[in-house]
Length: 157
Image (cartoon, rainbow, N blue to C red; front, side, top):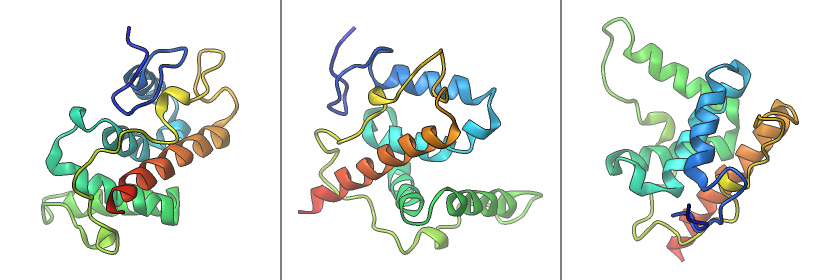
């Protein structure tokens, strides 16, 4: 096992970020309250580890993460619900980028070498990421999201 992650973070007790990411995905399947943060988790993880992402989606994921940082989880969930409703029942297909239009495109020249918060720094106690409660987990995901947006924006300077 390596002690350095692609995002520049050092490994935590569970390993590198991918180990934390897979643990989160598994745990949120059994916890609907934890699952509420699924979209920011996926966006932040893929933006911090773009070698694991499909490049064509990174811009949209960066914009979604900015919306989350700017307006919060409820706003991001409303946009997601809008997308599901828009594409349901044979309606117009394709992703509606209008809610994300105000946000900056993904900067070129990335990814950043490191982020001030990464998945391998998430608390994991008693076999869970939410042992300290869902609000605390949400704050940790918020910090990772903010660090991800900040890291990518730093490439503009």
